[in-house]
Image (cartoon, rainbow, N blue to C red):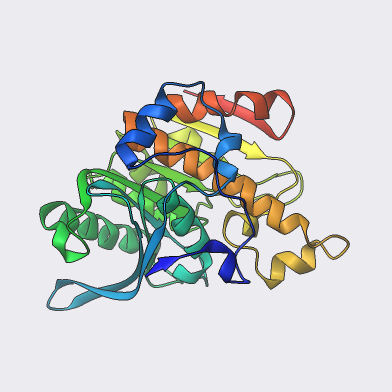
Length: 300
């Protein structure tokens, strides 16, 4: 069914973009013809979203994974962005992000894997899922453009995304949402990544994330990193009760932080899907860097 973002209380209220487009291809041409600006992705995109919940995707006789799929209703073919949760979280924590991506012409999929790891093993499952979809998109939907798959991971879920990319999963690149590192195997996985990666971090002056610097340090090239001022680790998903307690004086700030993360994620995923690189996203962050919304920007 088509979903209206405003009908569910648990999702932030965002206005609909005034951009008019009849298809993702038309929207892509429009966006690429103009100066990139992450601020436009704060709004919902121009397309309706079709939800398919609790899909069971069989990868072999012993392995089935569950996911929620958010399809761009206007798309005949569109990129697929797979979003993976971190420790003690689930696909529900990234539902808003997946829906937002779909409104901007990309199919979004929020995936459930074991939420206490092991994360490198989760990465191998993720790589297996990507390769299965690339071979047989009808596993989830025929409207998937199998040449344009982007992986997104939050917190320890970023380890799984890194492991999948290091395993040469058939993905264009990755977006890591305030990634957290652990274990001796992670640097090995990061060194094997050959596709572009964007790291979008929280404000480490408020909430330092474990070993976040490993991702920029060990990925060989094609990696950019920004931090979003006045945000915490949980803001890289939908704000939960823990985040609300962290901002007791002004809990509405969590919604603003979530929208800041989702706009940076959408610019990054769109850029990867449309161009195969991070230049589009990086250029879209320029005004935010200049006005201090984004900081600690670095790239190699």
